[in-house]
Image (cartoon, rainbow, N blue to C red; front, side, top):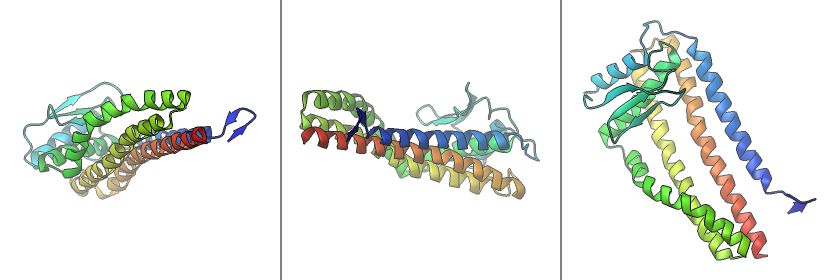
Length: 228
């Protein structure tokens, strides 16, 4: 497992980093590309969100601006849809696509979407286990306590479960967004670029789950090596 002092399980970390970099590069380049494509109707991300929410009789969600780039998110606790600098007042295909995606989460909330509820229920569990996992794994590896390492791996696996549950939430929000945008807010010519933006954004969640899975695999290999 070692080559001149090099732990070859680091290869898994490098692979995870590579996947993450590809995902970030893809979403950034795709978003920037279609940020140059202005919608024919000249509608901003904020206006698109308000139109979508009103059309679906959602009147308790407010649309706000938040600083940063691609920091868009829906806050189900406070019923607030926050759009970033690149989305809020921009009239690009990218801006409208992202705004519609966040509206998709608001629609999920209104529909009591199962995976969204499950993800919300996992948040406190994951927050606790993620803080606990690394100390358990490190102490277990240092002291040679395999049981402690395995307990840490199980705790860290909760992160992967959370990320896997997040995937259908994000995919469903994008599907809802495309159904809304197709032929209404966007023209037929603008639909395909919007779909590319959302597909690239979705891959970041896939990449995150793959990265966590590879990290868990590394911990398992380290535990077995220590046990041997």
